[in-house]
Image 1 (cartoon, rainbow, N blue to C red):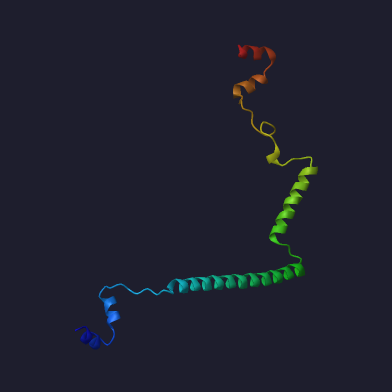
Image 2 (cartoon, helix red, strand yellow):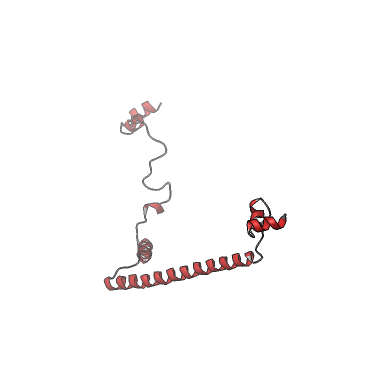
Length: 134
């Protein structure tokens, strides 16, 4: 009977077992192939990154040429120069920036506010001041 089945299916019995829920055959070289595929992907990624870095370096050379031609400074250089100028001005200056004034000095309002009556009493003659203070 097995012979007749094999002849009728034409050698497709291996596939028939898989279709009926049998165990699939595992390729012994599958792990090796997957490892080679992963290595190829890694190598392609490295090549892509190297190509991008090369293009960016070429662009930076072009940008620097334009900056030199027109006397333009990089943003980082401008910020550094502005910070250095600010520090240099603060060292030799007689006035300090407002942030450097310690609390309790200068423009702050007094903690005790005088009432209007106290202000008026200050401007009265001496004997009248004594009368209001009592």
